[in-house]
Image (cartoon, rainbow, N blue to C red; front, side, top):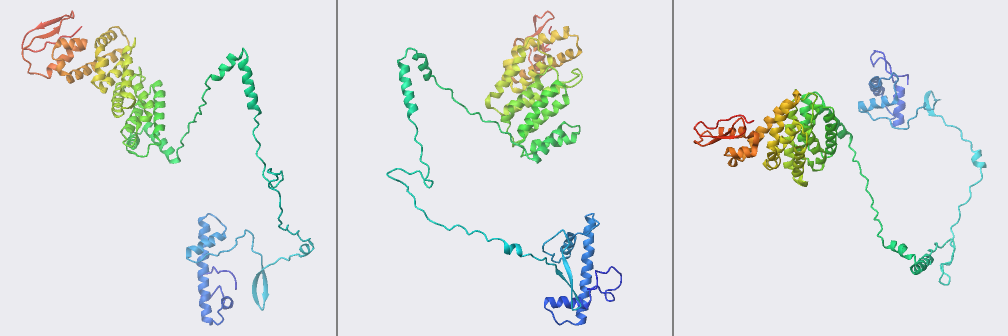
Length: 485
């Protein structure tokens, strides 16, 4: 071998990196003894081309690895890249200890062998011989008893009957004693049953579920409406939210608690939209989360103040949306008397001594959404109280927000009574019935009913004079409405 691979630009035929002697030597090692000079020259040229190509690829691997030094792994990767079999063998971080040995004008590299000193091995004493296997007999039983020898197992220790005998003697002595009554009566007292309480286990979420929960909550609470819509659509259509449902329920409940105190109306609306998306998901069952979701919705319906500026912000829309959502859930889940219990909570508002107009409006709207039965049993008997309360707030209150809330409550109550009267139209064809049931709202209810029936025959109509007394009038002009005082 004349040297390493050449980097000159000369032709391979003029400057070959491998000579014929090297090719002949390798051929003899492989079993090829007779080769012509032209064949050896062709093999040398091919070897030079292959080596240059592999070394160039090796340098590229080192450059792509951002290393200035070429490692053996780069050479192996280059061989694999070019389709050659890589070199297999023992790898060492140190240089291979090859020694150059000349023989008949040829350079031969041989592994250097260290001399081994045999004197310690010769002078060391021989190891001890292993023990020979032997058999030994021993007694298992002697006269019906097992002897205490190491080969036999330990005998079982019999239970000492002495404590039972002592307990029986002590009991007989106490029965004969005069003071034994209270002591022995305690033995008949039933013992407390020991109940083992099972600890609650927390089901951990995988990393993908944690990231999904974080992204969904941030998108819904964020300011980007497009991301919020996409996140709510994902909650409504995703079929793999069963493991995340308790987390979403807890997040909604805690979010409503915090944001009602801080009067964050927008966040409360987003949380109610989350409940709506979860309720519309056909693959989810909210039965086990209603103990957290129902109080959250009722809080958004019945809270006295939901925003920082009640006279400007439209918190009425949140109360109406939460009421419709509450009615939808009560119709979907009929277990545990949910509808009756929700109706009972909404009815407690009307028994308070000083309710707010916003709370009454929320309860009124929610009971209307729950159906005519709930509206008839709770709101209809309170029609007279509701009219007097609205009039009292308008006359005595100096707060503009309270007066605005009273107007909103009056409008909502009027619409609710009209809607109920239309559903029960056969009962309220007479003004007397309207006055008996709707009190201060009778004029508006009766007028709305008459407007839907234009072909009314001439019939006596009843109106109220300013002093509050009814007045009977005859004529073809229909109903002559006057404002009720």
